[in-house]
Each structure stands twice: as structure tokens, then as C-alpha cells.
Length: 73
Image (cartoon, rainbow, N blue to C red; front, top):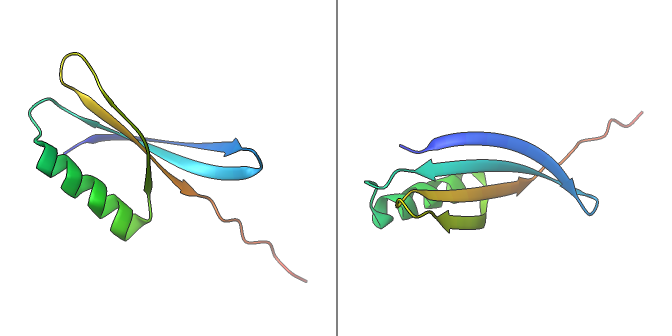
């Protein structure tokens, strides 16, 4: 199971929520692909960036747009 962190950023007038998933070296590519697919399908995340570090640790940044509902009078 990956470690996850969450942040929110505003970029060019659009606000995005980010989740960073860190996968240890022992996790297979198929398991990573399954985990990212589940986040995309059920939680509406999109893949923003991936990095593979020297030790084999993989980190994936997911993002989704934050939709603010404004109250009407």
C-alpha cells in the first residue's frame, strides 16, 4: 500500500487538490498501475507527474480540480 500526502494549490485561476503516492521498491508495476487506475476511476484523480528515484522508489502526483459551490440567495 502506498503512502499518501494531500495538498491544495491554485494554478492560473484554477484550484487543484494534489495527492502524492509513494510506492516502495518491492511494489510491482502492475500493482502500481492498478492502484493508480482505482484512484482515477473511483475518486476522479488524474496523473500529473511520476518520478522513479535511484533506490527504486516511485512517486506519483495525482490531481483533481476543486469545484466550489457558491450559495445563491
